[in-house]
View 1 (tube, rainbow, N blue to C red):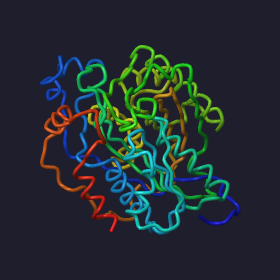
View 2: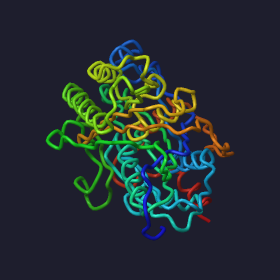
View 3: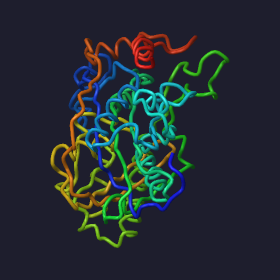
View 4: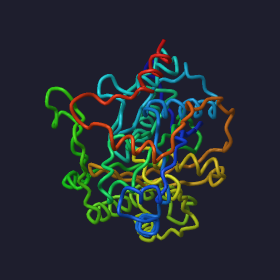
Length: 381
C-alpha cells in the first residue's frame, strides 16, 4: 500500500465487470423437486430463473475482477486494496480476497473479506471509498460474489426459489472531479438478526471436525419484508438529503433485487417511478452480495447509465443490514478494453448441479469440490 498522503475528494468507479455461471435453473426446473410452479414464484417474487455455479466463488470473483480491471484500463499490479464481499467464502482462513490477489499476481495489495450478507458488496464500496478519500489507497477493487447454492436448503420452498450465484467487481480510484460516491448510509437492525439466519455454518455448530453440517434456514418473510422496506427507505432518504439533491434529481435507481414487491414498495415511498428503476430480478433472483453489484454492472452495460447521471443504490441483507449509496457517474460509460477470460466450461445443467448438491453428504467431513482442488492447484503454481 502507498504511504499516507492527501486523499481525493471522491472515489469514482472507473471499471466494472461481472461473471455469471452458465448453468441456469428455471422455475419449471424447481417444480420437479418442490411443490411449486412458475406462476407461484413469479407472482410472489418476480423471479423466472437463477444461476448455479460449477466453480468456487473465488473463481467467479477472479473473472469479474479481471474484466473490471480491463474496463478501467488498470494493471492488476497497481491495485492497492482488494475487498471481497460475500457470505459464501471458499474458506474462513485464509480469506478469499487473498486467493483473488494470488490469481491476479498482485504483490502489494491489502486484501480482506467483508460479510454483511446481501449488502456485503455495498458495504465494501463504502470502505474502499473512505480509504481512497483518506489517501491510504489509490486504486481499489471491490467485489460482491456468492455461491449460495452450495449451502441452500433445497427442501424449503420459501427459501430455495429465491437465491442464485454470481459475481461482480468494480475498480475505484480517487478523483477531485464532482463524480463518484457522493454520499452513503450504512445501518443494521441488530434486534432483527434472527429473522434471516443460515443455521449449520460456523463455530457455533462445530463438532470438532467440520463447520458445515446439516444446513437449515430461518426466514421470516413478512418480517424481512417490513424491515427491508424500512431500512432501504430510511437509508435512501438520508443519503439523498446529505447531498442536497431531491428525489426528482435521481435519474436511476438500482436496488437490491430480492423481491419485486420490496422494490415496488421502496420506490413508491420514495416517489420514484418504475421507469427510473433498473430491474433484472427475473434473470438471476437474489444473489446476496452479488445482487446489487451485478445489477449495477448490467445497467452500465445495457446503456441505462449516462454521463453525469445521479444513481441511487439501496440494499438490505441478513443481520439485518441495510444501505444506500448515491453516485454521480463520470463521463465514460464504455470499457477501455475487454478482457479475454472466462470460466471453464460447464457440461451440466442447473438442475443437474442442484440434484448433485441434494445428494451430497451434509455432515461428517469437509465439503469437497473437485474443480476447486484441481483449478486452485493449477492457478497457484
